[in-house]
Image (tube, rainbow, N blue to C red; front, side, top):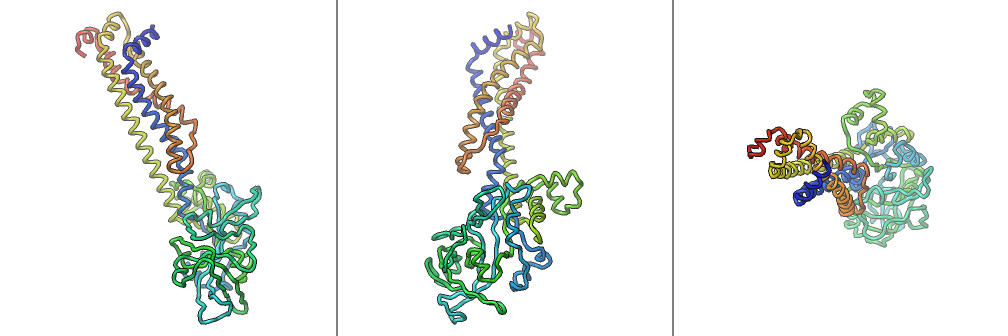
Length: 443
């Protein structure tokens, strides 16, 4: 009998049922798309925010004892270094797959001129930066691993050509990049040959370099000559040594636990420590890097790390608000449709009550109608949400978002919940009235 009554209800009230399905379809489509985006937005945004640059800095442990201003003024002979052989250890931690890349750094002041003669009147003091551009490095279990500034600093803009330092095979003339401001002041152009001279105590060396590109970063690199690390080490007489390493890692936003660990790791109990250590917080990754790299201190670059967490948290909050608004709007729409449907069918309901139908039987009829609408609208909405999520991913990130299948049962349950909530008030109200009230229009 219930099935027959449902069939007759859909047969004679098809337009209103279709309107309810469309309402649930729109809500389910929007919610499924937003859930899919919210699940995958963390990784996608973290990768996009890598354009801010590295978020972790590795330095010699001795640097922690002195302010940055004093460290910058110490001559190379008085500085401590990180052994270049320690670099593969960066990819030998628990969160190794979250390490996007890294770039060692070596800076110093040298004399530059367009002639090979040393100490000429035309030579000037410039700062050089030795680093990896796109360098191949031996990493266990990862063949052909490349890392460098091209990976961790996508905001670097090069007019001309990047330096190819894959195998450090340069010949007699070293290819370099020159910062935009430095090139502008000295009227240097792509293709120019410069001679770099360095002398400290009894050590002196000279390198011929060729400007291969003009570099624009908006930072101190605009006033530097950026060259391959091995060439800078040879020029400065510090083979196999680096001053610091910038690391770009995918991290999750900070919360109360990570802030507690940031203040004092020793304050964590055993359970908190395990949970913090096994979560990709920037502080936990930094802690693991400090364990892996000998004689180093690892510090998060909080300006970058905090920005990533704040942006991702605000986007996820916005998605949650929009999802909640869609659910409320859909529930109100279903409630309005069911109320008008029940009012139009009041005589039918009154006759059912007069013939002995129980209130729960009348409510069951309306709940079953709502359930069918929810299932149809929810399934169609999931399909539409899958397409919308792919479109959003392709448009915003250049790659489709992965649609987690857990979204489908969640959206179906939500569609059913919306339909039942929208049906609850009008169905209970009419079911509690006496037959005479319904039949005489006193509801």
